[in-house]
View 1: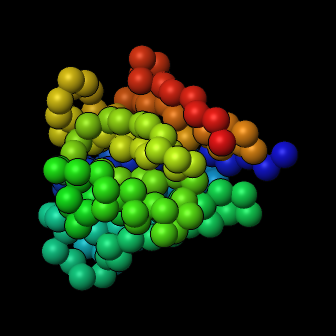
View 2: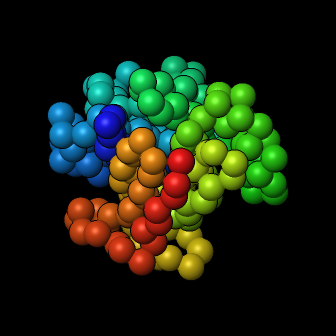
Length: 173
Ligand SMILES: [Mn+2]
């Protein structure tokens, strides 16, 4: 049985230390680390070695891609910040992006709100913001996704790597 562990952060807005801290905590121990944009760091920053990162609306460095598709033998991950897909107003465009990539998991950010849900086969995950949370959950969070052949489990962690269990969810695939 193939299984993968993914770490996802987003919207660090200039806080380089937390990006480096999360990377150092997990690099080599998980299958991939993602940053969903609005880092406000140069795309040439060496912190990005080992991190899949996309452009956010506050990233003016042209070196970041708007989207990234990461494929493992048994799981496809589509990643984008979300502002280019109008996610403040609707989910249709992000849905289409995920469908076109045939994504099992769609990673986004932008809203600074931790969220995970499934539409069709795709599990959509916003890890929240590691710096500026908004909405009902005012905790600075990142996400861990554990993928097996039949399940996708999404859980959230604080900047101190403490679990934040009330937001955990499990999806069938
Ligand atoms: Mn942002």
